[in-house]
Amino acid sequence: MSALDNDTIVALSSAPIASALAIFRVSGPSTKRILKHIVGFVPKDRVSTLANFKSSNNRVFDKGLVVFFQAPKSFTGEDSCEFQIHGGLGVIKILMDTCISQSFPGKIVRYAEPGEFSKRAYINGKICLHEAEAISDLVNAESEEKVNAINRIINEGFGKDIISLANFIIKLRAELEAHLDFSADETGSFDMKNFVKAIEKKQIWLKRTIASAQKGKSLSHKLSITIIGNANAGKSTLLNRLSDRNVSIVHKDAGTTRDIILSAINMGNLQVDFFDTAGIRETTNEIEAEGINRALSQAKNSDLVLFCVDINNFNEHNLLEAKGLVNSVKIPEDKVLFVFTKLDLSCDNKILKNNAHFIENKVAVSAKTGEGILNLRKVLLEHFQLKDSKENDTEIIFLRKRSIHNLIECELRLQTCVENAKSFSLDLAAEDLRLAQTLLLEITGKISNEVVLEEIFSRFCIGK
Image 1 (cartoon, rainbow, N blue to C red):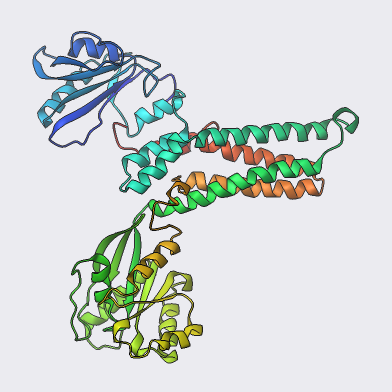
Image 2 (cartoon, rainbow, N blue to C red; image 1 turned 90 degrees about the vertical axis):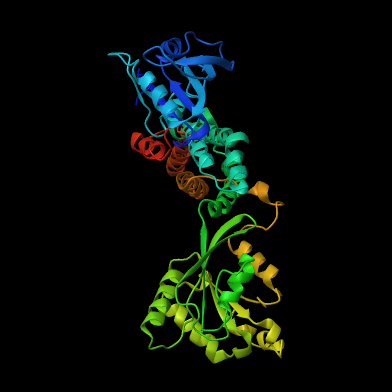
């Protein structure tokens, strides 16, 4: 779609199911003509108006609210309107068909493509590219924390900060290139110290923003944690305690769990899928052996692995055996947390302390009594760089992978620029600034690639 596209687009913006109410959107040059045909007049700008809705054969099919938005003061920047109708599928179909019936050669009315309303808003300068992405993420946000993190991007001046930094870099480039193009008599000597100091000041903001966005990455999808360990190590009891309900069967006989048991658990700012798995041991039972293979496969593909070890059977040999198992399936050590279980049955609480040098990533719990569970939750949240409170919630922002990558690359370019400036390689420093500027402007869409735009907006839902 180009900025000169004369098509008028229509779409159902609410869910395509029978419901009490539905929202239907129209945007483009034929909006007023469609309004005159359906409601008989063009309502006052931005005023919710009650009206009868007529179909293409001039029959009233519904009565509801309609709002007209005069260009350019609309979401898309074009003439647009919204119909609030009853959400019966028959009513929705009649309204859709009536809108499409107003399509004529040169005045096309058609169904909107995914994300086309937001794309028009971007092309018409109503929103920046990162704001369009944030709108899509907001529609799909499944937690309060993610909603807050996204709104910080939309409402708290992130785009202005990016443009401000880009303008700062443009100014530095101009000064630097003047030193390259003209003599010192005309421009004065190059003040390397102040040049470097100015960039390092901006790097502080960049690094802080990147850190906040890295925290926000944990909100982008459900995390997965797999619980593995020897048979009868307390894995199922631990899952039940974390879930606050009986998800897995617990029995004194080893080998009760054979398949993978899933439990979705909210932990502070995190949404986590926990997987209880078959106990790992030598077995001739084909079903149990398959369960063990599935357990190790699930562990390998998880964000974190909890390796349960019965503290009462803990010794150096068992721990080395457990570490060897983890290494054999190529699970990185920083993705493994050893959980020493059955603390309530331990007759010697010094066992773990005396053998602490064997392992760093560890916690001890009693899933039966709840001892150590709060500490385990805290360790899990810290592993994913989030807190189980609202205190540091303001530090978290949610950005797409594309934007985070550009921020990281921009910071690296500025660092290279500083190094080149210190060695008075001013031509290289100027090129670093040019690349840093481009990376920033790509975030807001001031510099854009049509392929990137198609990829971004194709992922939107229809009607947004």
